[in-house]
Amino acid sequence: MPVPKRRKSKSKTSMRRSQWKLILPSVALCPQCQAPKLSYRACPSCGYYRGRKVMKSEEEKKKKEEKK
Ligand SMILES: [Zn+2]
Image (cartoon, rainbow, N blue to C red):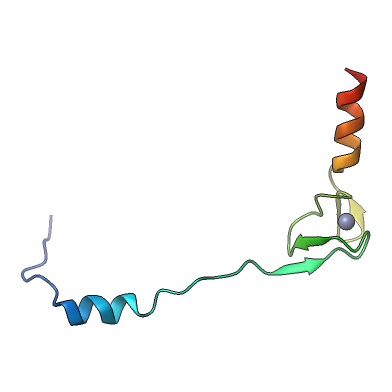
């Protein structure tokens, strides 16, 4: 397995680490219920994605739990 010949200097390490940044997730509002949701994900509060119901909403999950 190849191994680096020399240890990287503190300068080179900090130059590399200077590029580390925090990436915030892109949050958008749901067109169905206006709740904040992650873009390109189905809305967790109403279960809609691209104007179509694709999964059960949080409210429906709670209702199911009550029945049990
Ligand atoms: Zn929604």
